[in-house]
Length: 326
Image (tube, rainbow, N blue to C red):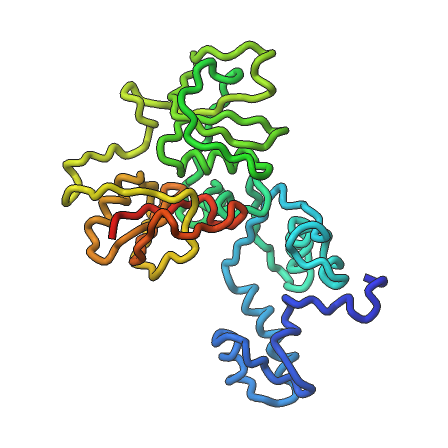
């Protein structure tokens, strides 16, 4: 901090940004929640100090949880997080800053014990939301499905469903992607390569594996299947259960940029593409939907094969847009 001169405490996400002007007036961009205290304390010269203290006291009364990526340690000089001197005084990466903040809260809030957890990935929101820690906090049940590692790579891997090799993926991320990808029942993964190779093959503990010289350091990870080839625990969707015959859908490589207006989202449980198609068919306004990770979001926009899609590095690149002729 000493190398920052007088700027070491100029951190743009702190309560200092709540106020503007010499008399500590509240910034016009501040939301209603903070402004409730402005109405209580008025506009006198002490508003800034009083409000800052009140916000701290409020935090100590709330059930706030913090979730950090265990591997979110890419230096902010290389990543997209703030890298100025004041920010780096908090830590060199997001994980370090988060853990330092936990210690800070304990120091400035007497008898306050911050609640936080770690998930097995880097800065990746889907891995956070599907982690067992998030599920336990929000729904009091584990959401993330653990896969079993085979002794090596399955001799017969089946057909490829999708390959993810645009960046380094953690094992947890590959599990999440497989669970949310239609037809994926297993995948091949090498921690050093960091790529996910999704497969449609049901694997059992007795499945023969390739010889050690032919596996390139990969292992097959799988979820148990039933005798009919269905992944255990997945709902079986029957055409007879649909309210009307489903229209033939097509899909884009990734979700489209212009999705139109949202109609309804289905996130309460994992759904198949077929279920989401039926839900869209039952809504006269639905013309397309975004699907990924077992979730679907209905849209009112007509999509064609020429619609522009998001880049492969976008946060929502794991979703695809399914559409029917307009």
